[in-house]
Image 1 (cartoon, rainbow, N blue to C red):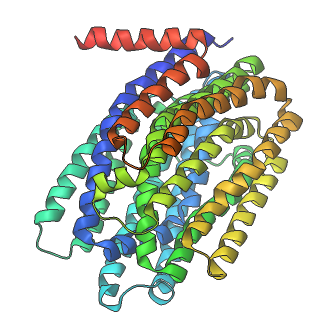
Image 2 (cartoon, helix red, strand yellow; image 1 turned 45 degrees about the vertical axis):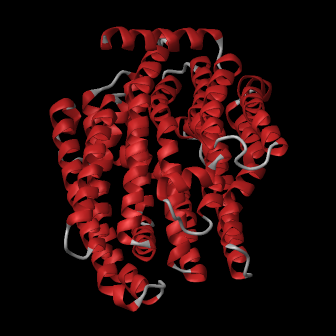
Length: 511
């Protein structure tokens, strides 16, 4: 029997340990993005974004294999954690990652290289720099791919403090990069790509040596277990196709924007992605902390524990993102001017649409964890395939027919909103989720918090002319008001007690 209280305390402890640190990381990340944009210029920044997007289209392989590793290790840990089985899972997974790395290099250096040189809209005088960026991006991604099974081990074992250490490392590295980028007398775009590659090398070495010392299953050996390979392949097939379509949509839209609108719009989308990634990091930490708990409770047959984790996880993921999303939604242009000074056209509306997309995705993210944990993939992923296919088709149609680029970005959140009730209904059919339970415990609190948090500022905006009230006042009061609403309406009493107790504990030991 899983200890519910102990699990909840571990999740809250892991999340709070990373949450406040993430604020510093976000601030540094936004600051460095401003300097990078100003130093590289809009065109070079857009080139880096679109070329990186082409390479990232191969990331579906990494995402698939990492999810497979994480899922099967968590399942085994939920059953008791046989070290021999864990070694087999890791060895087979690492071998698959190595094969995938070789395949990616071959594809990237043939089809990919032809595409970036013949189909992307790149100024002629930046073609050499673009090719250097492309090569560094390929090998940075290969190192990231080989880090994936190691990261999966860390998440499955719930050693979330490692993300905190890597966050500190990331802050230091970004500041060093910005300083060198400003003072170096060389092609800054090429240097930027080279520096990122060097960082990827350091990150891979860190993960390798940490896992090698910490987890005995990291000892790699050549293993052939037909039944295990078949099980991994069956699960991975659905995840592979779904992840591939997801990457195709995200990076396909980036390429569409480049072809139809040019590098400047790619720069705007890149900045929107930077903001969205920074905001998502707050909820990502909690989600990573709760995924192994859901998977292990499913493996142990603790259905009640699993659904309690799902509903709590869904609310927390949404609220952790929402509290920081509100000021960005209300004062997007002011924050952009403060952050960047001048910024590319469409950046503000791109950011708002990306935030809405992220909030909608948070509502069903925990249900997707249940799908992977139970292995009931066919119907769920069929609808996921349909969603992604529709997004790609409509995005192309909207771009092709001469609409403004923000119409293209708006396609994903609109279709995601339409499919939201469909996925909840599927969870009822596949996993016997009580729609009443999910509506009462998740949907209603989320809607109440969203409406009550935003409504006062909507009326303020209608009643007072622009800039009558300082944007700083709007930003500060909106975050405080949203936090209060979440505490009073979004959270249950026992959750408030545990959060306050954890905060008091940290303050006590800090002093």
